[in-house]
Image (cartoon, rainbow, N blue to C red):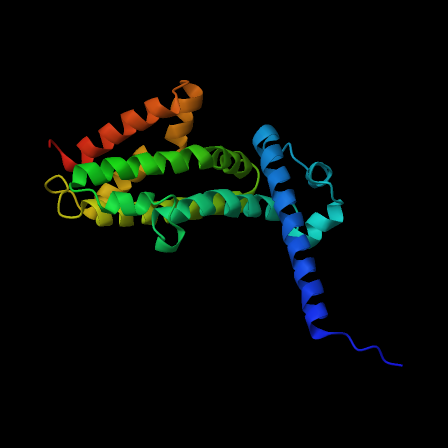
Length: 220
């Protein structure tokens, strides 16, 4: 006798499997993030990530394709996830984007945006350091680093257009403002000040926001 499977039961089982797979991927990427940040790209193995996540190495190869896939997955869940709210209206972060848009002057908007961007940078800077380390031995990481730089420049330039267009220092274009902001807000600069010099996040934020507003908008 043929056993008829209820379609709703089949859908439920499929949903459960999808949720289990998503949870496994999340645990793998969280483990990879911890080990990459602690040990660097070269010092982290797929086997170590698997052990940390409580899976077998074959699961990582089947899910993410190996060590390179782990790094790209970590980037997606950190840099891309945190950068999105800067521009994407569908991913507002605690209403910060709307608050910035509602400020009256370019000085206020640019200062608030810079503070927002510093918060994002504090979360993503360790991953940028990881990519720089990987670039020493992995050609794909060099290309990845360049792509992220161009994406970051495009994001920042668009933010300059959004918050400071028409108010920039005389003779300064939006594109030039984007390049200067991108340089000042680079992960490398953040790492130097907060790790190399031991600045606190508040020291970094205050210095950078004051410098950025003065450099791009000139005297109030």
